[in-house]
Amino acid sequence: MAADEESARVDTWIWSVRLVKTRSQATAACRAGHVRVNGERVKPARPVRAGDEVRLRQGGVERVAVVSRIVRKRVGAPVAVQCFVDHSPPPPPPQAVAPAGRRDRGTGRPTKRDRRDLEKLRGD
Image 1 (cartoon, one colour):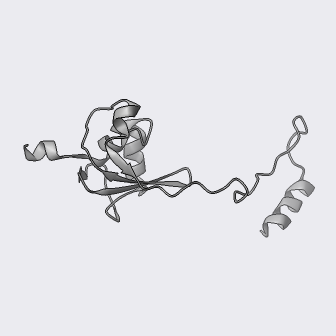
Image 2: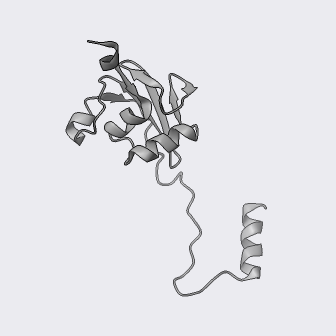
Image 3: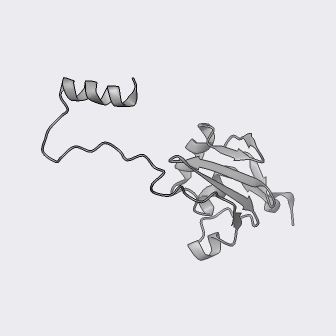
């Protein structure tokens, strides 16, 4: 195998194994510092090799994947799961997630009094 075949760009790889939906999202995640390879923040063009640990934080959830196979083209879901070993922590139980404040449908925007009450609850 040539040196080119042993590595791939990190943004291409996380898109190829379906950790993100689009290639541009993968690039944006790298630029924003949401992607780490072996513990260090990386730029989109950083090469990844088999055995590297890739951490991707998106939507408040962290995905941890150890590269087991290099792919440069997007592959189907059954093949994608064979390209990495998933070490992601389990999602928090539903009770641990704080419920978002909800308003009844059709009640309109919150009044100034409602906003002040919300600020009191949040401690602002």
